[in-house]
Image (cartoon, rainbow, N blue to C red; front, top):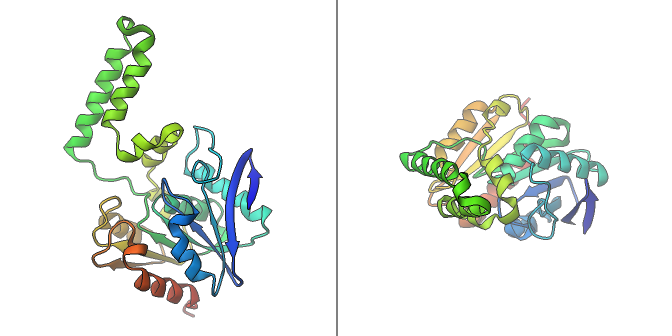
Length: 256
């Protein structure tokens, strides 16, 4: 199904009956990324999954967007679909969006599950700073009059060579990717009141476990479970264990 919000054509799927649950996929994903989780939860919940703007069948957003704008669009979708509040499950980039939704629109969220979530600005090794230095030097060099109209093309080639795999594949979403990967959401976490479950892969190299531990320290009401042997897609690597954790968490009642 499609909804148009802020001029963006947004594709989503919904199935099942019960309390609403919204699934938010990671960067480069779509509704199918969390399909096994979607299918599992529909037995007990009304589950919504969507292609975030710029992915899958949803149209791209303006290039100036960050995760706040993604969250604001979701708040509008809640209103359009008459969802008063929902449980959130966000993987990787979807976790960034979920954190923003919890912070800016807390009334829309019941419980929060972050799975190998992004949001903590990573520790930078020497290689990162070398690449940044090369990129800045290339920009200064190619911006001089000697290269004329070819300067932007040459700078783009250098950035493409130095960029991550996500950057190289991002196409017209590159400006958004640069914005979101440089967002540090730590200042938001201490003011998120929702009961939160952090599920992480022990061998996650994209969002390492130290980031999960940082989130746990900052969130007022959070529990962390590390899945041994799992990577960044821990919900797939340890699917039965993941499903049990999610079911127990969503069905548990708050302590009196």
